[in-house]
Each structure stands twice: as structure tokens, then as C-alpha cells.
Figure 1 (cartoon, rainbow, N blue to C red):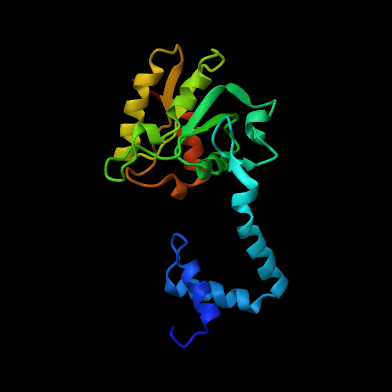
Figure 2 (figure 1 turned 90 degrees about the vertical axis):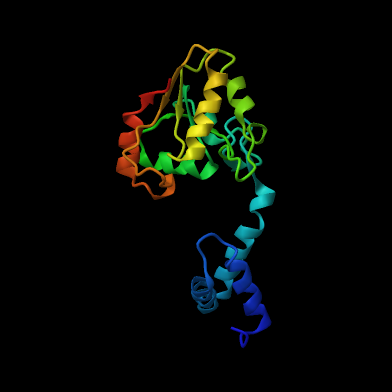
Length: 202
């Protein structure tokens, strides 16, 4: 690709930094953008360029929200069940469960999973924030919806120590999901059924 102009090479380099985008995909995306009207490319660039300026983490659940819309729309929704909190790894997991259309409770985004290999420690996760949410006694159930992996299991085991003093039901979604798979690749029906068939965590 050395024969490409410098401006195109810079775009290819940046595109390849995205997850799952290799040289061929980056080239396909770049040439697609070149074929589109310039205004479309400018809108895409503007949308990308402002995400760090306009978006933030919800002060309650840790999901993504607009700076001027905090707490997020889910946390503020009057018809959501504030007695149930679904604990997920990252903010994008919230959209996965929302797609099912069957879960109407709250969320809590940990911001990762415990991992000695990746140097993720308990203090790196939003565990204290979850415990604080249980303090007023309104929450009756915490659902763990973490990927079925070694890291996910270790995180649940660690967090149980902090949830035990609270008089709440602790469950985790049933996994009709292959062990070691990522929730991103689970279809909506399977995920919805796993949520409905969640188990007590002991």
C-alpha cells in the first residue's frame, strides 16, 4: 500500500486501530468513504470527533450518557423497576440486554472484569458504587450478567463477599451460552431466555 497517497495512508492506519478491522477491511472502508459525498464523510468525522466532549458515564449506573443528560435515561425512567439491578461488564452490554425488550430493571456497569493477566484489580472496578446503591434498602435483587469466563466467575465470587451483608436476592443469568463465548455474539432470544432462567448465586 506504499503507493497510496499520505492522506489515505493516515486514514488506513487509523481505521486499523478499530477492533476487528484489518488491512483489507480498512481499505474497503476507506474507499467506500471516498465514493460517498464529502458531506457524509464530514458528518462521520464530526460525530467521531465529539464523542469524548459530549458523552460521559452516568453518575449512577456507569453507562454512557450525554453530559447534559446525567443521570442517564434508563436510571431516570419512572417506569423502570428500580428494585432490580443487572450487573454488566461494559456499557455496550447494556444495549445488548435492551435489544431483548424483556428486561425492565436498572443496570450497573463494572467497567471490566477482574484479571490478574490484564492487571485489573478490584479497585479498578465500580464495585463500591454498586454497594452504595444497596444502602437505601430499595434494591431487592442483583443479577450478574457477566460473560461465562474465568474472569467473569472470579468477579462474581469476589463481589459476593460485598453483597452478602445486604438482605437481597443475588442471581446470575442462566447460560444456554457456550462457555468462553462473548455476550456480544449471543442472539437476542438466547439472551432473553438466559435472563428469565437466572439462578441463585451462593
